[in-house]
Image (cartoon, rainbow, N blue to C red; front, side):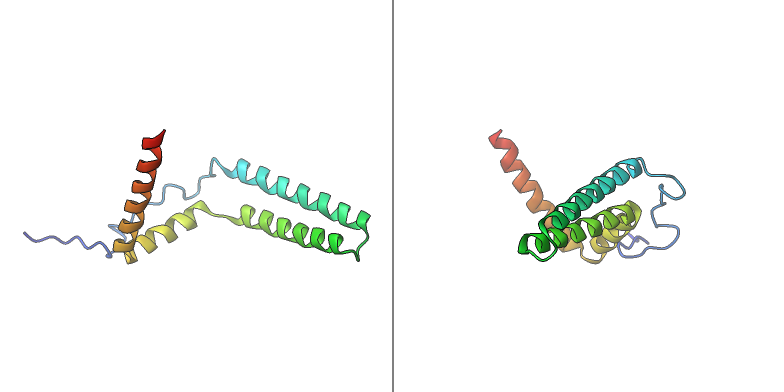
Length: 117
């Protein structure tokens, strides 16, 4: 029995069609809300740090945390579900054995946890 199917072959005919192209994601509002909340927390930390004095150890930690929160907000805004899905599909196709082992282990752990409930 002959088959033209190859799990690593990804031509235009066999590639999954991207259903997200040109469509706004339903989670864009959520992403924006999370990013805004992170920025508000960062701003509050910056204000607290300036109230503590810019040179104290606590103020330094607060400023570092505020920078981290701003970076996190930028990451959330730039996150692309489509890009991450494509990246995941590529990793799975390049490492099918590892993917099956991880999926099996996750299923086993979930099965054990759900059986105890």
